Image (cartoon, rainbow, N blue to C red; front, top):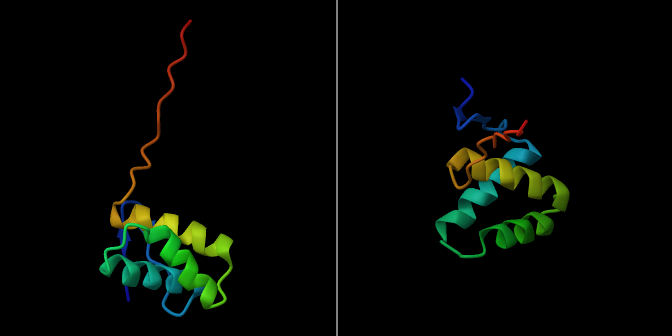
Length: 79
């Protein structure tokens, strides 16, 4: 099966902890809560997933689905 890339992010492998965070993120997104991150972290903690792992992977998932723009800022130095 080919890897899926979108917005410069690759979907984690099925069965991995990282993928479980993504699956939870998609589940929570469907219920259209305004506290998406909080709900995802709460559900991940309930399943025994480390908060740090859940937090990072949720941020990567957000970039994948297009909820954030991580374009690099160019800093111009004056001479």
